[in-house]
Structure formats: C-alpha cells, structure tokens
Length: 212
Ligand code: BEZ
Image (cartoon, rainbow, N blue to C red; front, side, top):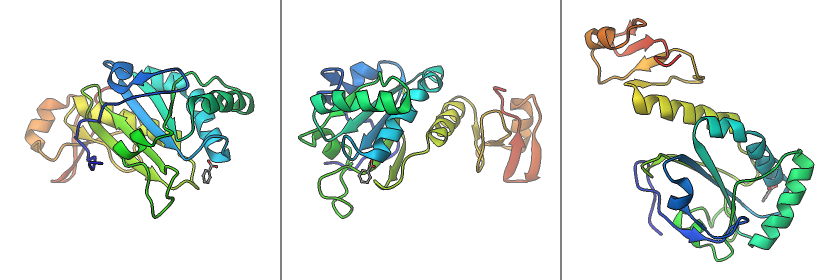
C-alpha cells in the first residue's frame, strides 16, 4: 500500500460492484469523481449517507461529478441493502457500490485504519479531477456521517480555483467573494479581475466570484 497524497494519480482498479465489474478510469471517463468508503452494509449511518448521496445526484451531475461508493461486503449484499436505502430514504441509488470483500481497493486507498478498526473501513472521501489526480482527501470516523453539502462546496471551490487564479476563504459558498491568489500582484489582479479588487492587507485581496 502506497501513501496517496494530494496531486498524486488516483490508483486505478477493477473491482466487482453492485452494478457489475467496474474499472475506475473507464467509469470516470472525462468526469470528476468522488469515491467514498463505508464501514459495512446494513449499518445505520451508512444507510443515511448513501440515501443522501442519491438524493444529491442532480447536484453532483450539474458539477460533472460521478459518484462511486465502497463497502467491504459483497455485491449481492449491496444489492439487497440498496433496496432498504431506497425505501428508507425515498430515493434511487443508481451509482455503483464497490464490493471490496478482499479489501483490495480499501488497501490501495488506505481506507482501513487498524487502530480505529482492524477490518472495516473508515469513512474516506477522495475527490478525483478529470486528469485523475487526487484533489481532496477527508477521513471521518465510522461514528460520524459525512456532510454532503460540504462535499459539494469543496467541489465548487476545486472547480473554480482550477480555472481562475483565486482561492476560497473560510466558509465560502458558491457565488461569494474569493481571495486573489497570493502569486498575483495587486496591480496585475486589478487588470485580471474586471469586477474589482479590494485590498484588505497587501496579502489579502478580495474579488467577486469571477464566474458569478
Ligand atoms: C454506521 O454506518 O452506522 C456505522 C458503521 C460502523 C460503526 C458505527 C456506525
């Protein structure tokens, strides 16, 4: 198992899933991807998370992000569990859940943290850009369900900052003012950002979201 760091290529894999065999790179194609692990099937927090992910499917699609979940149980178990999730969360899970019974993908992505639990995965999240580089990693404990609003917010920031020389401040939400990249001089920023630049400190310059 190699350590994965931001900017690394996401390791490719082929694995069984609730929708049959899946190859990560083929599945993602030119899209962004979000890969998130679940400790086990038929567990309460995971049921709410997968239901929420399915309810947010239009939001992920709008951002050109394909979802891919993982749990260490088998594909037949996933298919049965999805029926429960759909019923309980009043939704349709139509993205694949990887069946990682042999922990191959979990090991590849370092999703098992033995001092937390020897066999089950923690709640890992990887956001993968269209060039297959890893742009974000978050690790939650099994006892804490993820905030999918936050994951969408980070994707908005990643997609904005990939195309503009800006960064996003604390608690930023789509459409709010952004920070001018520290690498740009204030003089250059004033030419670059037609909506204006406000210099709060020489190193802290704000500008309206260039895409809003
Ligand atoms: C859950 O998904 O509810 C869960 C799974 C493992 C440990 C704790 C909670």
